[in-house]
Length: 187
Ligand code: 5GP
Image (cartoon, rainbow, N blue to C red; front, side, top):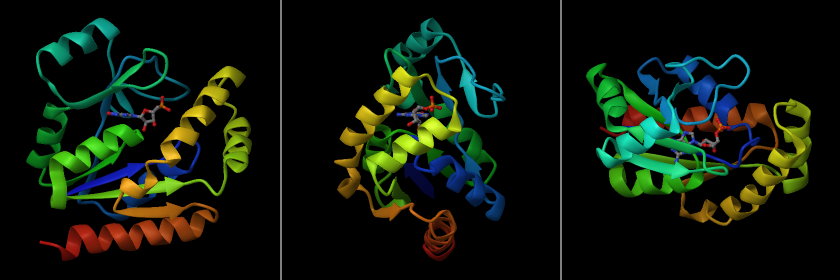
């Protein structure tokens, strides 16, 4: 089974995904490949496979990606086929934390084997406050993320479920119930 979490950045998606990984030990995080450099404490092979843009483009040519996107200003992000195979070999379900377009593509590929969830911020103003508060991006990057968030919100209805994260505890509980029902009840 495949669980896909998408959201404009700053919506609390990563917090929710981490919570689910702690809760369900038969769920494993799909580590994406990216051409962007590591941020903060990020580690290669844990948060992402950090590879060069050249490497990334070679892998695209070789057909090694299930999906990929050029997300911000030439930065490439994608899911390697080998990553899904690795998780399947472990006998685990896969959880994705990817951008909205990527999520829609994956849902198209995996159909009923996938649950797609859109985490929405309560508002764009609140999203701005959160992005400024987490203090990891330059002001121009924040504006870029907000502009993208506007566009991404329009795609929310294409997801199986929308969760509005105005209260993190509620959003965590709701996500937990949804994922539990999906991966453990539907066989
Ligand atoms: P960040 O640079 O903040 O880690 O990620 C930027 C965006 O890229 C986020 O929306 C994240 O979910 C998305 N992303 C991460 N991995 C993938 C992937 O494999 N495919 C796609 N399409 N987007 C991804």
